[in-house]
Image 1 (cartoon, rainbow, N blue to C red):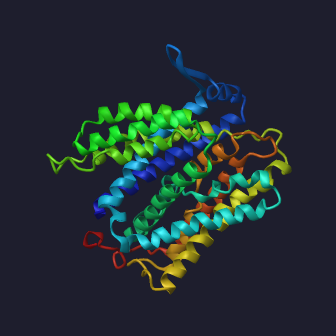
Image 2: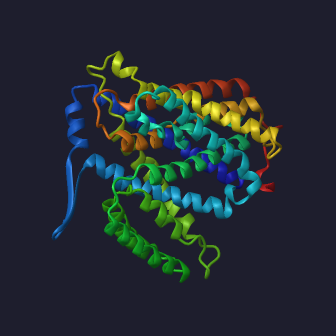
Image 3: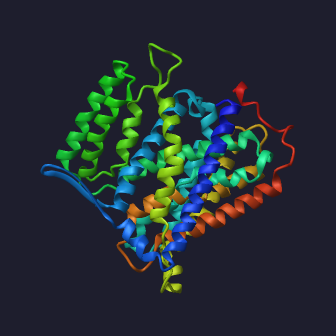
Amino acid sequence: MAIKRIKAFFEFEAAGGIILALAAIAAMIIANSPLSVWYEAFIHAPVSIRIGEFGIAKDAHHWINDGLMAIFFFLVGLELKREVLIGELSNIKQIILPAGAALGGMIMPAIVYLLFNYNEPDFWKGWAIPAATDIAFALGILSLLGNRVPNSLKVFLVSIAIFDDIGAILIIALFYTNDLSLGSLAVAGLCLPFLYLLNRRNVTSITPYLLIGVIMWIAVLKSGIHATLAGVVLALFIPMFDRTDPEHSPVEELEHDLHNTVAFGILPLFAFANSGISLKGAGFAELFHSVPLGIAAGLFIGKQLGVMIMCWLIFKLGISTMPRGMNFKQIYGAALLCGVGFTMSLFIGGLAFAGDTTLFDERLGIIMGSIVSGIAGYMMLKATLKEDINSTSVDLTRH
């Protein structure tokens, strides 16, 4: 990424993080006000699409989580493909440090969560909830520090979040899959050769990809695998370059077209539909249950430990070096910001527990852990970053 592109991405994601926060706060306020009846009516409103004997009937909450979030995952897939082919993940030397940090930042939170719930096997399925980082929120907090933030720190945090997304996608596919319908899975599989053929024949029109993608999404939805993964798979077949016009990139064009819709439409709607936690009647038993406490501790304690331990090991073994313009205090601040899990944590939490218990609300742990991590990360970086970073900024165009 060139510096100009990093700044544009940083500013865009930061703005999206602010909108996400406002949507989540609005949901919390409404869910604990007389308007809560309308809130519940909205998220449980039945919505169905039917063609003859075939139909899909779900409430609004499921359409948002299974349908609209597939578009979010599609965008994530596009970003991953671009980063691997021409971006930060295309150079092995540049990915070792954030990849290791992300790995540690996924393993340690899971361990911390399981330590809180070691004697409750029914709750072990929530182990992955604190494993993800919300890049929009993290960059939104980082943006509050203005031009004191070195570009190398922004790239480091963004790269960790990218690997976190890869990890979350694999976790959802491998560990949060219901009983499989082989027939539906076969239909989804039949879509792949058609997508491959379109790619090989340099079809750059998006329409045929989307038509096959919709069929694949429906098949995956019916198969037992979470439907949003169809979005990631579809993204991998979108051509990175147009062989007849090197200046045209279908992947980047789609990214540009979808960013506003996802950041300022889909994700805030998701946050609004999933953050409406009612605290009416909630006592200490619910607030301090081992599940929300384990999630909060995983995000705040596990994330920083995992990121810092892996970075220290990588430096100690000489596998990678400290990015120019950064130091351990800044890495620690970034490690704290990685504990802001929100969007992906809410998503995995819904898959893990799906509101099937009244003993606790896992969302309380996500919000508590994210808030504490965000405040701590901001305070740490504010104390360590200098007002003038001209002497430590990185010329990324040389890498």
